[in-house]
Image 1 (cartoon, protein in one colour):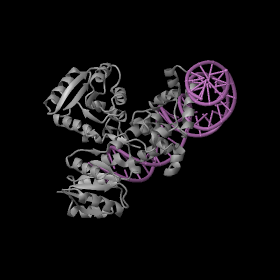
Image 2 (cartoon, chains in turn green, red, blue, cyan):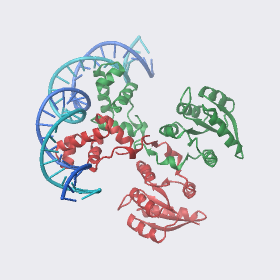
Image 3 (tube, rainbow over the protein chains, first blue to last red):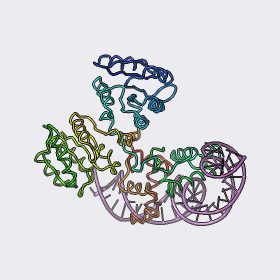
Length: 207
Length: 207
DNA sequence: TTGAATATCCCCTAAAAGAGGGATTTTTAC
DNA sequence: GTAAAAATCCCTCTTTTAGGGGATATTCAA
């Protein structure tokens, strides 16, 4: 008997998923929660085998919750769920330890298959999602020189197309400061202009 | 009986894969090729069910071959294979129609599983590869303003960190020309500096 | 064959970024 | 409590980009 816990802020979705899962042989829903705090509390009492986790939650994002759950309940398999439009979050879920991703409009068969896949220790990803994925750069992200918090902030704004002066205004610092951060990033990452910097940043998921 | 065709320029790899597959019940290797031309020729005679396709081929890249095979043999399931270091090509394979991706160091079990997955119409992706994937931008790439061939060339070089003068030297044109292309791209893509341009380009896989 | 798109080249000015340098304060970690 | 790291700020000078403008040859499709 596979025990499933559902976290989603939409009661309708919880209803729907629960009824689909109840119809599956050998599967049971052992609990549901509508926000992250409740979810953590309830999981502490009974974690089950598979967690269906919505990406949009009222308190903290499903992505952060995913990371937290992975740390506290390493045995629990996590399947991210969301509507189609949230696709840009899929991989952040996976990078934070999710074992697969399911769209809310999935069929009963797909849901069963997804659960079976993650229980078997595999990644579940529907084929129509596959083409939306592209690999991050060959150089592992964790062997990149570390950027400081402030540098990352500046980087975001550079990537958004802002100039040093605009960034300075946003961060309430002098343009000189922004310029210094920018130069330090160029040095750290061994590139010599913005184009190469942004390319590196986007390819490594820093932006 | 599942028929498998192997394309790889390394005889050792063909040997290895063949012997692994021969040991699997219900699987047979119906042909092998060491380059794309031979592969196409032989596939026309007997295509089989699954194509194990190396990314590095001497004549045309596995990625292009993948696209070609998809058009000519739509029923054939394609599993990309490569060494670990080629991971940056994985998704280009998938975007060109591959049904999964296998590393050459995969175990017999993983190979069997991959074949079974693609035969079942599913995507096969080993979990340790999953974290290397990130979704492409939410905005569909095909609804982006079209760049011309020359603009794309210039874009590549900008993304590589070259200045207009350096690009001009590479393309044997005047720096003014490069500058014009650059400005046209900024206008077309509605961004106002290089940072935003490169971000857009990388996120949409233009680079 | 003719017009639109593409590619090529030039001018100008102003703004922004890159490459050096140095310096101080504030945080953080040991 | 101290040393290292991070964040802040400033200077000069040069190179590169951005934002205007305009012009001509070529390619390509209708």
